[in-house]
Every structure is written in structure tokens, then in C-alpha cells.
Length: 195
Image (cartoon, rainbow, N blue to C red):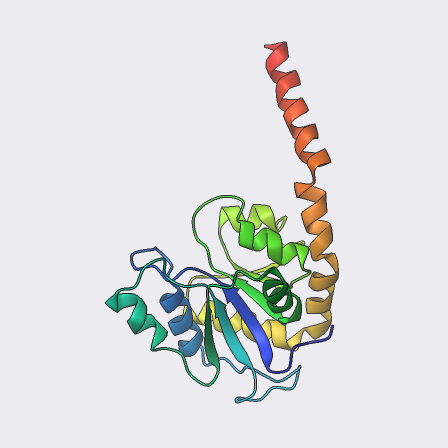
């Protein structure tokens, strides 16, 4: 995989106070885990970045406080609406962090699968279902140690990360194609018709 120089881990999210798992919480867990963000597979402590794509839908003191966490290796892009820029960010990250805790099928994770990202996701039933129980991504627990352990595994197992990238699109098309969705609707209709 051709990597964008200096970009190792990416995260798409919204900076909103009061969400159960905020971007600030994620950053703090990553900092607490003492991540080694290496440059193109070489473990260093200075070249690569955690890139957070997204922003708060409003301006307030809390959102500004979160943005103060930005530093040499933590970058906030703000909202990115240019599809080519988003495609580049997804396509060139070593791993995509997905920390959403609630909801169902998440559009950001669908995009990550479509762009062939190796996905590191918060361990939730929704994320387990989307990644087909580990077939197309790995999971971390909602702790600094959980993030640290998974990042170290991702850095140590570069070949397995390549496998995740190579099979990501398959994970999208197997489960989320119109043919598959149509088949599932037909199954439901047939079951209902028998009642």
C-alpha cells in the first residue's frame, strides 16, 4: 500500500460534548496508551500523525478545549467535504479508528470498508456485525490499555493489516450490496407471508 508520508492512523468523528465516547476521550486514551506512531512501518515517536476528520456542528468552549489537544502528531482537519480529499485520507491511512459506540450501520465505516481501510473499531455489537465478527477488522476495548494493545498489535502484524486492507471491500460488498439487501427483504417477506 502506498502511504501518505507521515500518516499512520485516521479517525473520522464529530466533536460533540456529551456523547458517550467523544473524540477528546479517544485522544486522551490514545495519549494515555503512549502510542508509538511510526513512519511508514518504522516505529518512531515523531513522524506519523493521528488525523481526526470532523468537527463540532457548533462553536462552543468545550469544542475549542478539545481542539487544544492538537499537537505535532495529533491533527484536526475540521470538516472535509471534498470527496477526493476524503478518498485520499481513507486510502492512505495505515489504520482507520472507528470509535462510535451507538447506532447501527455507520456510513463512515462503510466508506472505510469501501476505500480498503484496515479498521480498528470499538468493540460493540454494531461494529462486530459490520465487520463480520473480526473478518474485516479488529476491536479494542474502551480503555487506554485496550487501545494501546490493539495499536501495538497493528504495528507488529503489518502483514495481517495488509490482509484487512485487501479484504475490506469484500466485507462491504458481501453484506451491503443491493443484491444482498434485496435477498434479505425477500426472506422477511416470505416468512411473513407464511404466517
